[in-house]
Image (cartoon, rainbow, N blue to C red; front, side, top):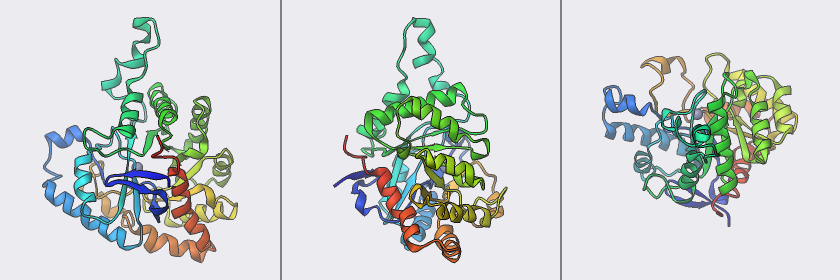
Length: 328
Ligand SMILES: [Zn+2]
């Protein structure tokens, strides 16, 4: 029976159940938080708040969340372990690096940056870091990452973005762990991902193109789905530059075009994200963990999306994505 690693240990992929494929527990700027902890407040209060919000999510029937919080987003697994102990939900964690332009300074003078100086190809230490998180666990916690994450935004395939993407692809080849890429479909960055993944020999079926649901360009999404990628329709509730209907209607349209087997649903929500000033969340009243079950699924059903298609997107596609994980 194939298994996937979660914060509480391995789970049979058949037991993942309804799965939200891109939800954070926390998104934090770690060194700012270490020095200016005033807004964060008490660790116990934040943990209790997360437990309460995730219990509400579990009450909708969701069994698993997939959390792509990696380097650059404040990943801290001991805190997630405390929360996972108190919530009846599988939490799947990631390894990788989140940047839209350059690699973090830690990596500036390591790995390929030294090629010219030593006159040889120096392996990227990121690859071993990612592989270690997947095979051995993260920072001595015993919790193993089950998937890989990188990003490309409107800046495109900068040297730093490409370096991380290739390291992620190489760690994928070494471990079989699937990949989620933050993309910017308005700049058609999925096509850049396609080029790099093809060059690295990665099957697009093992890659979620995150934030595909930010666009309403069905032809572009069709092109990416036909290339074999999984489309992350994963920002329901972030309706600043778009609307609830626009996000939902593109899912309806892609189902109509026959791509339910290549979409996953999520909200990219979190219990606390320090990127937003207090009060900004008030502008996004639907951006929370239960929006899909409370608002989106009823709308999709009204628009003719079948129960079978919903199960495909929430259960079968996530299960298939993780099917090879845990065998290495
Ligand atoms: Zn995210």
